Image 1 (cartoon, rainbow, N blue to C red):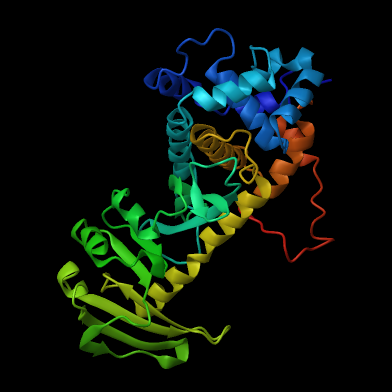
Image 2 (cartoon, rainbow, N blue to C red):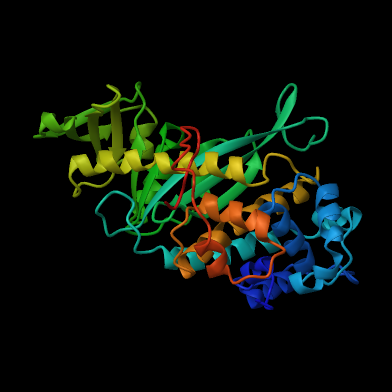
Length: 388
């Protein structure tokens, strides 16, 4: 009989705790804290993410039912919903944001050699935002429309592994393009974006930094054609042009040349226009890069379905951001676990297994090796799978 650690504890062992302690010290997370530490808070919230808990009362009931195992889970303080609520309310959310970034750095190194569908050596990011609706009465600090509130998650995803490289949480009134000011362009990297990110002054800053962008063009975009390149229309390409902006303000905001590519998707019959500052890649590769942007849409749908970020345990801005960042860190932690243990199961399956085995004592490899994936026998067109 295996007499080692609990499954939950083995998962938590993959956390860089020294980094976590540095984050806590930087933001004085233990100021006036007597018993319920920041690590206790994180483990309780991570438990809620892994086991699909819906409320603080739910977390308290489940953990107190396993009171004898709390010490072995690494939870030293007394678990109560009031204590956890107070911790989420008052302890700086930046502790968990910075810790999640440390986990992201680890995960990106592990997935650096993964294929994402386009044969390209450079790093490719997809940038987009998703909105999470809230109740205006409970969340008055995030007004959106007359009768409801909302927060917006601006996310930059590394397409190799679908790892979020950057996340910025704002109220829903934030325009998508404003987040470009928060990014530090990586020279040589590609940033794939939708039409909402067309701001020529900000895009020009990316160009000056040596980064490449691929953005979908608007129908009313004014430009002046300088040169047309030959394209093979059998591939779906319609044109490949070198242009300059011709709008009253866009010509000033973006004085350099741009590349305009028009492509017709044979599967959907839709025609797309792309703008990019890269003049070396084949036009078809640019179109394929934009098609890969759909992975960030799958990422948003996946985290909304399988992480606890649609129902929040607290109503303050600090509590909401704390829960979002811990959810992201748990997502990245499970992605790290999958890579380090060389698991064939999808991320969805790993989360499902962990949700029902958290209190068991069995080696992680054994837990997943004995798991039969039966989803192939009952396929669902609505199920999203990442890391297949």
